[in-house]
Image 1 (tube, rainbow, N blue to C red):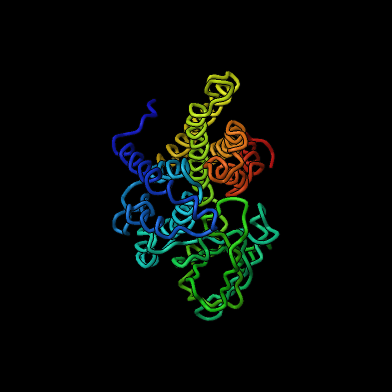
Image 2 (cartoon, rainbow, N blue to C red):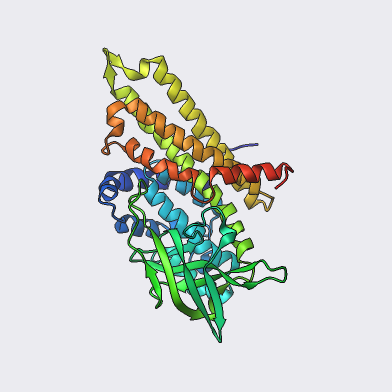
Length: 384
């Protein structure tokens, strides 16, 4: 077994690494403090083809795969998580459901713009008061002739209110199954559709240069043809979407964990105390060794999950393990990096302060740590 990257993957990784350090790193701090979406950086990412990485060329993609996307996410998150989550949500949650479950007509209409980064897509799953209980969906979509009429609301939706947001896919109750359970389907809503209200952006602890908002739907009408996938398969489809997305979040988390190592090693060489660099202190060395261990193990975990996915093998448990371990590693590494930096780690001018603020959401978004442990336990045959 060889975990070394192929020449093609390594070339991509190195290209994104260079972009992250030369373009993102010098600018993102100012965007972050202004809580401003970095349109010019996102546009450059689009021109590089990052939003089209895992999609076929016939739809405007780069002809790569999901692992290529993960490599890009890791390198971006080593520098900043706001741009990384913008890419992750735009691809994994915005465009991928269209590619996985859309009709040929839907793919040709939406994917070229989503792949180019000219347009961002969003996925409306979580609802106020719903959280991890996605089955408690209250948003409804009622078929009225040749149109769906949508009412309800969604919360914490990434990429939902930017100037380039073009498509929002939402889960909605479209009826009842014979056993009385909710029939959940997914429906595509173009941005700007009458009745769709995009709330002001949230005031967040972290990810301050990314776009996150609440959405509400008041008699929003879209064509019946905007149903994405089979009617009643929305719940199953979004479970597949989340399984894949957890690998992407694991890659992002790995990048943040590694970024904490990078910044802390540099600081340990530069900062002197009591006449010598703090990196000569065994207490600092042990912290750094453990931080590198966590980042390395996180990387192996998401590599394994992505490999299984690409081979067509079951990967749900591996995705859950990768997401769980890497997100908790990111939080721990961010805390330790802040400690190593001392008072400077609490100053926003240092990247580790941003990483500390960004890390916690990784244990919550796309399935909390508790949900991941539940999925792992069920995979071992333990009762639901």
